[in-house]
Image (cartoon, rainbow, N blue to C red; front, top):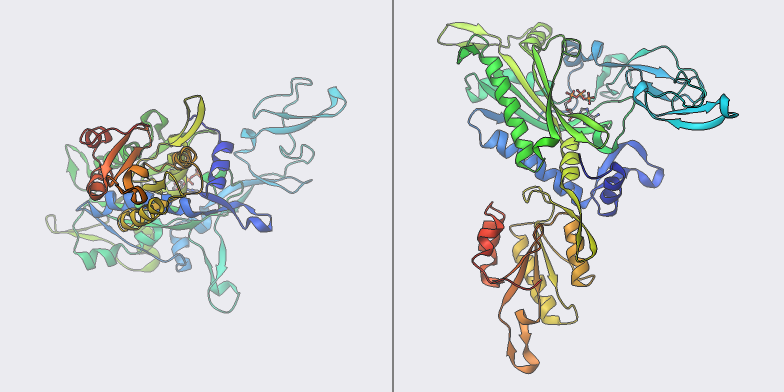
Length: 495
Ligand code: ATP
């Protein structure tokens, strides 16, 4: 179980500048979010690491950055215009809208006649313990009847050009995948690729969700990291069709990636779509679920979409979208394996999993044990005494030097204990403290030892390191060498 409730995380995110409600000074909108100074660093780190691991380091992957506004026929061909819908019900009283398939999973308000009309909020799916009634009315206001379900398209409509008429109607993309699929031939021709190969893209997507919620888990504007991996379905690998082989490999690679960057392996699980859940074009879909505070929910999906999309786009565009198999001398429509992850859900899961409340010498310490590659700030330079100009000057100079290579901050706005706690709370893996011993005392003719204290976040251990060696120490620490190994080469400092 994750140790933290969503409310605690939401409050930490706001207080420390990870995530703010959008347009907050105007009362806010509940369904879109802004990322603050630390949030944008964390978000960029997640995207950078994903891109590096899945695109730059692999010989069989390339990247793409397609536009958000696309030709409207794309969405006809992909099936989004006709099928990207959720069943929706309206409350006739308060006019709130709910997803018909989620309304029974919500806690519901009930005015109980057996207790003179007292108001109760009853757990989802349960009956009133006073009168035995089950929910039939609106779960939020407890008064209105709900309408019959109607299909509601989740795409945002907009108009291209100066005239708002049907001819110029288009959509904000509800996924990044279609931008990759319609560029299949461009990438194939420009890079001379052979199957199997994949195209990746990171970018914004928009869905007019009926019931957004659970903080950044479900919002109306979010970001996706998607891959379309093209496979020759005629080929076999180890006696199995190549698409099935690659599907399994991508499932394993994605799961391992999330664990590598911090999620505890027992907080992640696979969910195989059964026949009822499976999209009509998919051969098999597996979701990666994470144990969010509201329960096991989708972190990402990995689908085998067969040749459905390329065939649809070929049909609607009139362009051939095939690959020529030299060996078999035939044109092949590749099968597509689609690992599709949300940046915001990944960020939420990494934060939840990193959060710890610990007791240190009788005090509570909140620490984000974020993977150093994801941590928004890598190093904090802290002066032990801000009244000593030499200490402050050395601190500023160190920050400037280290910031050329790593995100480094300087903070002297509190006593050292408080400064450490602040950095722990935002997941900064290392602090560098400049003290009297570092700079000495020129008035007394005492030279400093030009050493600083380096403190590690998780163990809170400290070592003394010569200023001249700081770059090579952080090269190792932030390059993946374990703290214990680096610390063994330096004298311990008292904490
Ligand atoms: P859900 O069932 O939760 O609505 P989905 O199956 O519709 O998700 P996909 O279409 O497979 O989601 O999108 C791929 C990924 O994009 C999801 O696994 C999720 O990480 C992210 N995602 C989708 N919708 C949203 C949203 N409204 N807000 C934030 N992230 C989203």
